Image (cartoon, rainbow, N blue to C red; front, side, top):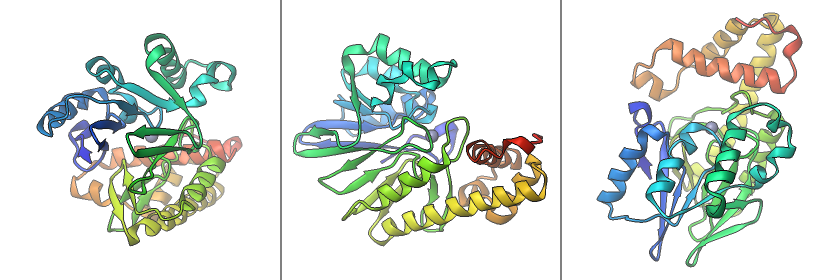
Length: 291
Ligand SMILES: [Zn+2]
């Protein structure tokens, strides 16, 4: 695990490096600003090549470094099959980060992309990495299971966690969040047998008893956030600020936000995003009053 110090913040974004008999994979890249941190780190642990770069989903903290890393290393990039069908999907109608990424993969990395879907396996010698489609946070999201160590890399598909404190926040951000598939993904991943650990992008590695706890907390928190948004939406006639206040009062700031004195405006921005994510996905829009 490597803390890429995203936007100079500690314990916010973890990247994972898997090495097996000389074959090396990187799970997610950080934004382009953290690539130097990563390259320096790889040097200190004597890694001079990458065989595979997995990008779990479109967001900049998971794919922002792809361009530079693909120039630096002769690696293959592993992404969801979702991108193979993008031109036919509703996402191609509007210029979005998804369509931009699709264009980039297709035009610049044509021979170096591996498109994967449910059940596909990428091997690092005898270590098999199995793919799970994990949509909900975004439609292109994949989770990766290291079958040798029974370690899961869920990306952002099960939200953000502060291990050891019980704090969790659903990653229900617009424009791509889908309530139904997010909930199904949590269930599906929680049913993986004999899981020994979960390597969380945000943030850390859950082991032993924490593994089931992470799924329980994920599901409970997801439902509690959703209920709070719906209830507050009804009570306050769709007023966004009231919904944000209700979420802040009920769930508070994360231990990390408290420790680092993260400004209220930033925390409210996150909660505003989550509110809009739920409102859009649950089709509550008709009464939406905005700010
Ligand atoms: Zn994300």
